[in-house]
Amino acid sequence: SDSYSLLILPGDGIGPEVMAEVVKVIDWFGANRGMSFDIRHGLVGGAAYDAHGTPLTDETMAEAQAVDAVLLGAVGGPKYDVLDFSVKPERGLLRLRKELDLYANLRPAQCFDALADFSSLKREVVAGLDILIVRELTSGVYFGEPRGIHADGNNPDNEGGRVGINTQRYTSGEIRRVARSAFELARRRNNKVCSMEKANVMESGILWREEVQWVHDNEYPDVDLTHMYADNGAMQLVRNPRQFDVIVTDNLFGDLLSDAAAMLTGSLGMLPSASLGAPMANGRPKAMYEPVHGSAPDIAGQGKANPIACILSFAMALRYSFDEGQAASDLERAVEKVLADGVRTADLMGPDGGTPVSTAEMGDRIVAALSQA
Ligand code: NAD
Ligand code: IPM
Ligand code: MN
Image 1 (cartoon, rainbow, N blue to C red):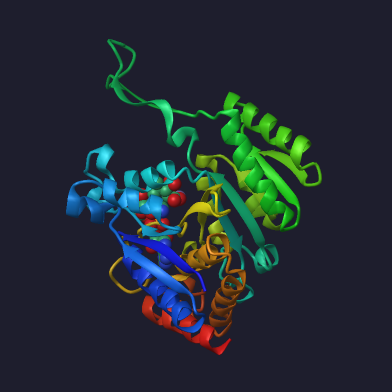
Image 2 (image 1 turned 180 degrees about the vertical axis):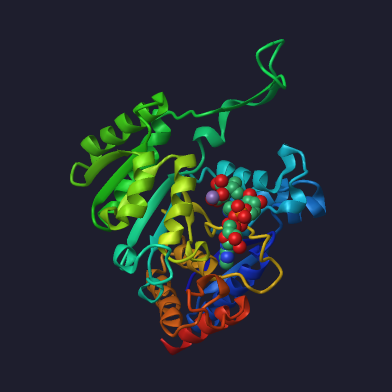
């Protein structure tokens, strides 16, 4: 069978802890499904800064360009808060997304039945939930120019004398390509897309709405498209999340809405993501797979982290980079089975408590469930 090349970047905080469990899963697929993986390891974020004085070296960037898929744990932490902005751990992650041109960030939020009582919302609201947020990832206010912190001239009305600037900027081409990703994905799901922006207050939102509509009318008229202001969207996500199928939105709104969607599933430790670029000559996209959560400094180093978000991110790699859809489904079913068996990390303790398992035990149980399938 094929050989797949992977660059593993565990990063900081709980990143290395959850990635160790993914490696167990990768090893299992290598040993039991005849897949062969060519795995390299690298540093990103604070870990790279500590070793090299930069959150991402040019060598690691070049390796990321060369492999079939990058797996990223998480970056950042209080230790690095004092660093100059240009070398903060988050800059390493943003450089990877930008230089790999990973414009479509797929953030599925699925509520496993075993966890329907663990959401902060009622079971009736979240049971059976299966939505997909498609977040634009390489533009918008994260990257727009001008940006910076400047002295505000001699403005006597500005106490403190400084101004902080970021720019929300979208081109029609950037909007059209991520809209196409959303429509394509919707066709393989329930054929519904809801686009979210703030066209009522932002010109970039007006352009967003017009271009998404244009792609719909010209290329995907069969898909059911609606538009919603993003603030209403945030409310609707917690009021009745199952009204949605695919949500497409910009970089910043997508960041916020996906963290909110995480709690519908029971824990931020459950949400995987795939960051995809345009299909290459071989038909596969450039890709990075990363949990939605961060480095969780409050629980790092204690074996408490939930590795499921990172493990399900690898399932997305199997599906989107390696065309191993059956293996991806098997892995998702193994996670579902372990949860149904009542195995829980600390973030999934319900109001009645119980005894949580460690990060490593959760990984072992998922691997064991794979073997039983
Ligand atoms: P966070 O996602 O790291 O943590 C938020 C809360 O969720 C914490 O209470 C944490 O303990 C909990 N949590 C997160 N993941 C968990 C898991 N797998 N299992 C159990 N509990 C989990 O967000 P934050 O605290 O705002 O940010 C911490 C650092 O992470 C910051 O430096 C931030 O910039 C960075 N960050 C990185 C990424 C990334 O690398 N993709 C994403 C978000 C935040
Ligand atoms: C995420 C994170 C990142 C983002 C940070 C760490 C750069 O919050 O992946 O959701 O804002 O995109
Ligand atoms: Mn985020």
